[in-house]
Amino acid sequence: MTPTIPTPPRRSFGMNSGSDNVFRNIIIGLSSLVLVATVLYGFVLIVGGLPAFQREGIGFLFGLNWDPGKGIYQALPFIAGTFFTAFGALLLAVPLSVAAALFISEYAPRWLAGPVGSAIELLAAIPSVVYGLWGIFVLIPAVRVFQVWFVSVTGVPWPPTGTGLMSAVLILAVMVIPFICAISRDVITLVPNDQREAAYALGATKWEVIRFGILPYARAGILGGVILGLGRAIGETLAVTMVIGNANVIASTPFSSTATMSSIIASNFGEANETLRPALIAIGFMLLVFSVIVNVIARIVITRLTPVGTR
Amino acid sequence: MTRTDTMTKSISSGLTRTVSPARRAQNSIMFGLVALGTVIVLIPLALILFQVVYNGLRSINLDFFIKSERDMSMITGGGGVLNAIVGTLLMVAVALVIGLVVGIATGIFLSEYREHPLVGVVRVMSDVLTGIPAIVVGLVIYGLMITTKLPGYSGLAGGVALGLIMIPIIVRATEEVLKLVPTSIREAGLALGLPRWKVTMQIVLPAASTGIITGAILGVARVSGEAAPLLFTSFGNPDLATNLLQPMAALPSAVYSLAFKALTPAQNEQAWAGALVLLTIILISNILARFFSRPRSYRAPKANTAKT
Image (tube, rainbow over all chains, first blue to last red; front, side, top):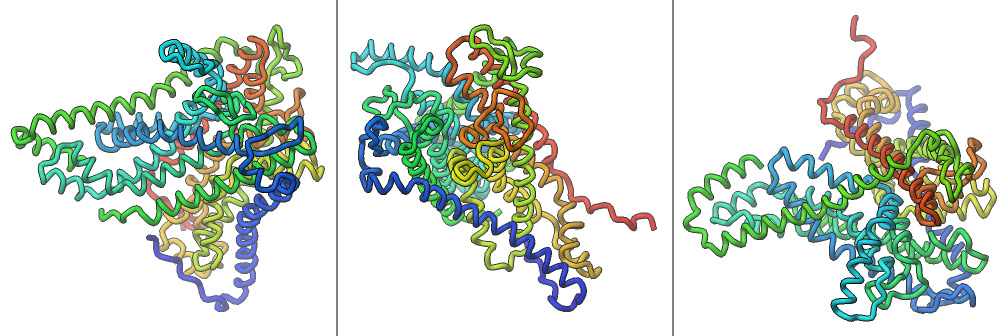
């Protein structure tokens, strides 16, 4: 905690206080743009999406029928698509991210921890379109090979196209790993050494130190990182759009083509007509609401629940 | 870390006989799983980097940098992405101006005016802005600048969208680094009778400049890879455009349409080449940011009176 800066006496500087006030007002004016922007986001989207909300009513959220040809816009298939892909991705990404975070902060010698940590951070720097490009030309063919094999072994009647839910989950998992890993790593590093030393003193093995000394301590922070990862997964657009198949229906099998809230906007907005466009903006509004809720919860979890370290 | 490690060694050498084989096996298995998980995380990174470089280098050539998408042929390839590179540079420049002005001001507000009642709200909102999906920002700018024809599909609208994404990144970087500037420096300035704005602008900000530069570079790296907010703001333009009021192409959008809406192998090859250029720009930015953010001891800004 840095000490607060003493406020200089307001009037004692005479001629200077005027210029100080001008500067102060400029700073406050520019900063309040951040507030204005956030409010404006919600306002613009709700106004733009209003026709769709009005026409469909509550069915916009809970109806499965999305048929631009007939002018029916019910967004549940895409809300479901967003949650299937996001939670599927987290299911894969969380264990891998925590493993990588433990490896970097607890197991690896310093000369290895640095490069491995930087490499994982690099995953976060790769743009969404590059993931999408790789998804189309490398991941989808590989997933298709797996699906063909899976169908031939199990005999389930799922069409093995490669494009669809499964590819989207895989690519999203890779994309959220660096975010969860970075936060897990930070909170694991913040666990006081007393915890480790106490566990070792009781005769614990390295794994038992991690299991009983470190993970319970870092749990809240890791959970916060996972929720932040969920926020990323919900908003991720182009990489998902490029591999998910963009079908206007809810996914019936893990191999099916479907769409997410963000992918339906990206793939349809450009050619949308006057009735489709408000529906897509309304989906954008719900995307905004979801991501704000998820991010606020993540910040609360990270700041409130992490025990204060003692070192 | 090292202290604990040496303790581990001495303890495990002393106590090996008391640890049951089951616990020892569990310990080894868990280490194996952790290491395996780390390797699995690194595999896609290696694959993506290798394939972008390999496929990109095969199809990149000089024309790719000096011709525009207008000259591309679906069948034979050819042409280039000069229009997209120039468009990305111009829109990122617009974004940088917006991001730096609003971002630094907000960072100053959060760090130097901590007694102000709005500080808490502004900090939370800035964090919230970080998490808003880029495609949503694109929709908002569509509603504000495209439907109103102010000025309609244009590089300016794309730049504003990217700027909104950049603001919270620079806010965070500025606030963090301003907090690291010692309070004594501010007090010294105030004690000399300098008004507070001069202390902030001429003493505190220069002392924090490397951190702010790092934040700005990271912001540039982030937004130059964004295509989602540009799809319906800058729209795209097959010709070279330098007028910010005209529709404008961007490198990530070009990669997106070449890859996703591609019909021929020639277009796919160009998508890989575009991805290579994009990735190179972003990796260089990240390396630059790392260079600027090397931990270094605090240095006071050069005083004018040093030699008297």
